[in-house]
Length: 428
Image 1 (spheres, rainbow, N blue to C red):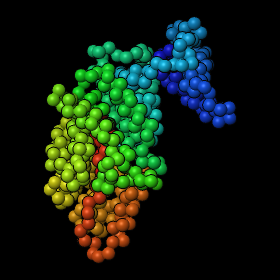
Image 2 (image 1 turned 180 degrees about the vertical axis):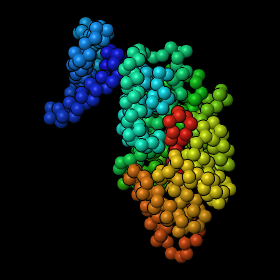
Image 3 (image 1 turned 90 degrees about the vertical axis):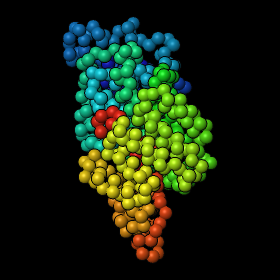
Image 4 (image 1 turned 45 degrees about the vertical axis):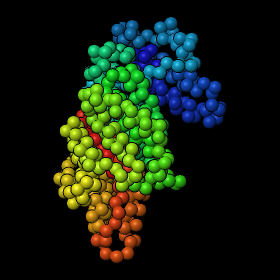
């Protein structure tokens, strides 16, 4: 709302952060206000005026003064918005941050930071780049927004298509971080997952004929449907093979399957629809053993053609192992060993450990599980991988003894490069 009223994205962000800081210090002492959102808006509005006036005093340029004069008549909130602020500008902000004036990588990074609430470190991990690189990218994007004078409004239909791919990827990455947090004590960040679904549903309502937006919503619903069974009483990760499928959200699965079923024939087929189709095959299988792995492998082949990346190839290798045996999957993983995007990432050794376990090579499985545990910042994933290694080490008999598979739950595939939609990250 502040960005819409003042037309200054970067300063509005600063004002909102200061309002949140004031809330964090005052609310515990004074109690929660009757209208928390209205309180934040009023405090942010007052701080915004101070910041804008300070900027005007520093720059002393008449054109800037004319454009940003914080005159109460010009900027005072309307009576119906001052305290209640019912209007939701989040989708507008998504399209604003994904403006063609920014590069795709900068647009996605800025939006994840300003709208999605992800930290710079989390965004850097999602894109597999150093945190300093991502911080510079976000800073440059803010400067570009400031200097461009972009209007705060939903783009016209002709402009919308240019920004839509970046908007979808932002929503996808917000959901992915919510589904499996890259760091911290909890496997999930429920607030991010719920907000991503809400905004994607709003995007689908805005563009009901867009098959990829429908596919993205389907993917989120089908993935989120498994969440009630993904963790145990102490927050521990439960792999797909061990989940109680009766706890899955049947209504979300039905809605997701219906969405992707309608979207695929409409075309054009995109990566989100393909991922939704893969998720649907997992969700509709009555048991892990009944999963249609040949069809999943075929769909990963399609996904590799549409949005090929090392991490899509990693997921495809695991699917190949489930169809053709672990040797086939390990051979495919060997081709990814020197890929710089996967260097230092825990998913490659985790996948390799799983396939070595399938093959009965317990010693290599233990080594790879431990290597993967040392590379992840997610405590639930770290504990799960460490426990897999410990259980295998504790088993009696030779290290070549055959053991059952320990597949982790398939989840959303998230970006690992700076090009939207071109690289994905799988969950197991």
